Image (cartoon, rainbow, N blue to C red):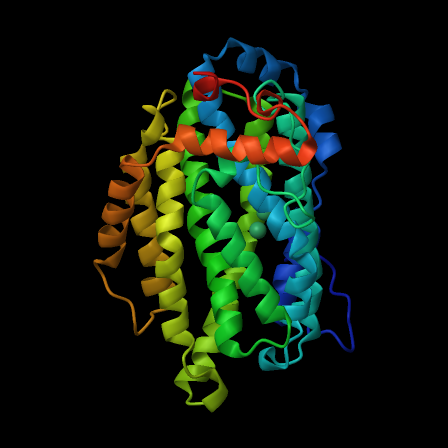
Length: 356
Ligand SMILES: [Fe+2]
Ligand SMILES: [Fe+2]
């Protein structure tokens, strides 16, 4: 039954015409997929068979991509309570519908974490022999995540979310929403789906693919939420309300701070390792540029938007990435990860170039 066909249930306190209520209702209806039932329905056998047929370099490429997803989903799931606090900010009009939506939002991030955690420990466990450190509780991201810009993006997001949730002003809320919903979900995750789709052509992993479909549908709502939130802040800035001045500039500045980390991650997963599964770095840059324009120019129409910035920043970041010693970085972070668990580093990262 679609939303339009549902019987109308009257409420007194909840504004059912609110766009936030609509997002909440969509989350209730579409966000209820279940990781265990998905595994039951699709099975893991085919994924394990395909996985076991891959070359070490191909496994390493998947491991780099999925490490970024599991760690960032974990980080955002742990920001769940902050999303609820942030949406309750008096600068966002004390709206119950926003808080209701935020609860569904937080739930889906927890589920995404569960899905990727299950997958790396069920199918990819040979290249991820040890994964259980908790980033926010004395641990650190997986060595592959630490080796690229994704870990820096996660740190930025956590820091901004903490400030925004703790009675943050509109400019701080704008920075947090830009990092989280525009850059992590809108550009980095969507870039990740682009790489994933190409890699699936060479090595189809049906359970992983189905999980990604559900995750990306949920994430589509999260990006919509980010755009709605930022549009609301921009509208108040444009109306001249003093507390909201500086939002446009903060969104643009924050996006430019985040962009090199996204490019670095994309390079790490593709061009840095001769791209054995055809993930396609150049195609990704093209896709990223389109997403960038769609978000910051078409949807938000930022005053600070400058057309050629994406290419300039991307070019510079790719040049730096080309000189980076990613294998050395993985080894270094594997050592610190292993130390925290009192293990040998070979028990933390295995496979692909890590075994060279
Ligand atoms: Fe997510
Ligand atoms: Fe999300």
